[in-house]
Structures are given as structure tokens and as C-alpha cells.
Length: 261
Image (cartoon, rainbow, N blue to C red):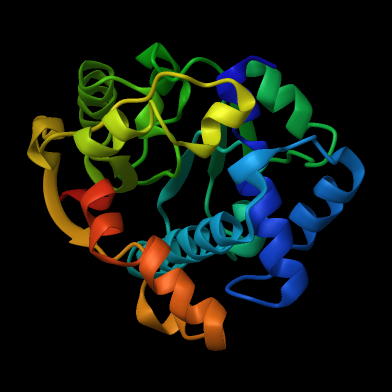
């Protein structure tokens, strides 16, 4: 896999780590895959603090998705940039068509651990080529999850993606995390993805730049909510709050929701 694809091992390790410790989310699939693969992460990419952050981030996305599924029980789910993530197993959606989308080589790797069926399908493609969206069956409502993806796409590429989604679906709920321009700038000097060879990431200046057609910016969510941080204890809780939930962190990482109603 190329350098961008190798970044999938960072959140995979984080989810396996917190799951094994009984924090934030339960992800036996991540534990299983990590135990077998043991990709040689190094430096900050294998930091326990980053693992806690990745675990909380995924738990926040899971919670949001569960809420959306309760509101729209017949929606199709698009998990863009799925990597090796086991969200389809963590989030109960037995009736919903679900598509995990990533580069072909990533999807080939997933096939070693995940079995597709009539409801659950995978799609190997470059998401920057938005023609893949046309292969998704028409649906009244789409719930779209983009975790750890936007920072590898330019604003123009993100705009093309949101425009294609707006064109394909009548109603949409979309959640994505983003770097700010400051975070993208600082990543040249210090970023865990550099440990797997990625040297170029992008920040989003204004969430409204991704509005297209009927798809509009809805709200900004908290990336590291207090109830999750409170699962940590003592010094770890104190350090994490300042490393990943403090004022600087809020200037670097954003969690944006979009809707088309």
C-alpha cells in the first residue's frame, strides 16, 4: 500500500489499544487484526495519547451514526475512507444498505477480515474520482461518514465530492473531521502520519466552502466530549485534556456536520 493508505494502521492500532483496555468503544475486530498484522508503527503514531484520541474520535462518530440511524432507519450508509475500521460491526444497522469505500488495495486487505453480503458491500476506488457515487443505488436518504479522510483531500476535491453527493441523494446527513489550515501548516513539522511517510495534508478554512446545492453546513460537534475523557483516570485524564482537548487542539481539529433536508 502507498503512504496514505498506510495511515489506516494508526487508527486501527488506537482502536485495538483502547478496546483492549475497555475504554470508549468495544472493537474485537480491531484487536484481532492488529494482533495478526502488527504493522511496525513508530514514534508518535504509537503513542497511547494518540490511541486515546483515535478511540474517542471513533466513538463520537459511532454515536452520531447511531442517532442518525434512529432518525432515518431506511437510509443507506456510506463509510468513505473506511480503512480497516469495524464500524459496520460496532454499529447495529441490520436493515440498512452499507457501503465501505476506500482505495482498491485497502478493500483487498479488508477482504481478508470482512465478509460482504447482500446488505454490506465494499467499493474499491479513489474517492477523488466521484464517478464511484453513481454506482450506489438511488436512495431517499444517505448517511455519510468521513473519518480521517478530509485532510488528504484539497478543498476543491472535497467540494467535488459534496457536489456529487448532493446530486445523487435527495436527503443527506454527513459528518467529517477536518484539519484547520493551522493544523495543516504545523503538520509539516510534527504529525504522526509522517511516521508512515505522508508529508502533505490539507486544512479546511471554512466549513461553508463545502456547501453545494441543498447540502449545507449544519453544526460543529465536540471532538472530545467530556463523558469520554472522564473514562480516563488521574494523571492520564489531566494530561489528555491538555494535549488533545485543550485550547490548541480546538484550533487544529474540527468536526463538521452537514445536512440536506
